[in-house]
Length: 218
Image (cartoon, rainbow, N blue to C red):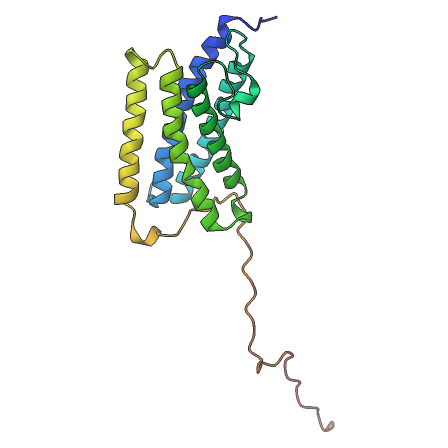
């Protein structure tokens, strides 16, 4: 049985942290493609949206592994409650609190996406803006908490992800077409809402007119 102080938990935490950072960088970049309605001959807008949606689920899966391995590792005193409530960890309180804030924001974005057909589009768009704040907060969390982010390849990855998302954010605002304003791509796997039936005017007959009665047979 693997002990809770095994270094493999620490290695898994570090590895999944890097994987989550790369995955969420791709998710945010794909989100800008969806928002700017990018799609053409080789790949359509709905396909881009589905890749964005599927990759976000994979990222949340690795994020869950990252949190579980961190909580199970008894070498540092980071409890499960610290993953949800900021400033409750005795180990690197502020950096871990930033990770909790990022996780809470991502949960809000993810749950709102699952309930997209049941909430207003304006509410969904407002909550979805939290993904940018969550990415920035998680990046600071990874830099302050991670042992690989201060030198070598780890530092290059952090800087590269930050720069890539920054460029994507600039293009998100400057390259957004006018026809995309106020619109969002709907997943083809989801059932679209049924449009309401048009109301007939008061003067319109409710029943079709009857044919005139025959006066008799010849």
